[in-house]
Structures are given as C-alpha cells and as structure tokens.
Amino acid sequence: MTARIYRPARNAMQSGQGKTHRWLLEFEPEARREVEPLMGWTSSSDMKQQLRLSFDSQEAAVAYAQKNGIAYRVEEPKDVERRAVSYSDNFKFNRVGQWTH
Image 1 (cartoon, one colour):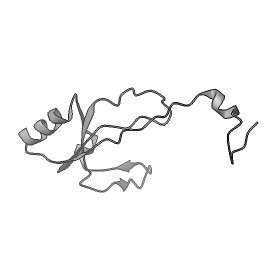
Image 2 (spheres, one colour):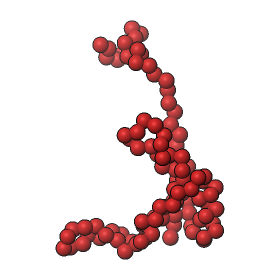
Image 3 (tube, helix red, strand yellow):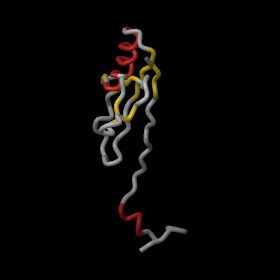
Image 4 (cartoon, one colour):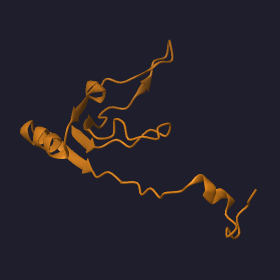
C-alpha cells in the first residue's frame, strides 16, 4: 500500500495555474485491471485506486501518511520557466535562420 504525494501539473488546455496549488495523495495500484468478458468494461478489485486526498501543503500530506502508517513517496513539482515574448517579436528584422512573414 504505497501512496504517491505530488502536486499536479497544469492541464495542456490551460494557460493559467488553476487547480495546481494543492497536493494530492493517491495510492498506487495493488491489483491489475481486468477486462470483463461480457461487456468489455475494465475493472479492478483494488478499491484504493479510487481514493484521491487533497492537502494544502506537502507537509500536511506527509504528516497524514505518517500518522496513518502509509508508506509514501514524494514527487517534487517541476516549475516551468516562462519567458516574456511579445507578438511583435515575430516580425523583427534580426531573426536569423527563422521563417518570417
């Protein structure tokens, strides 16, 4: 019963940072998923896969795991470096080796 504590990355369809400031605790799967032969649905007997706990900080998530005796691993978030680019940079004369309009 190992848990993973992480801060989710932003969705590819988002430009903002919504829903990326909370830390999540998810359990790793213990049983593999199986295809039900009649309907073709995917199912598993592991009910802990459905649990997803959210916390305000990494320390709170780690404290919860330690208090309840849950083995865990922490995945540090990768911060994205954003560079300021303006629309007018597409039309500069000093662009070397790039296609221009």
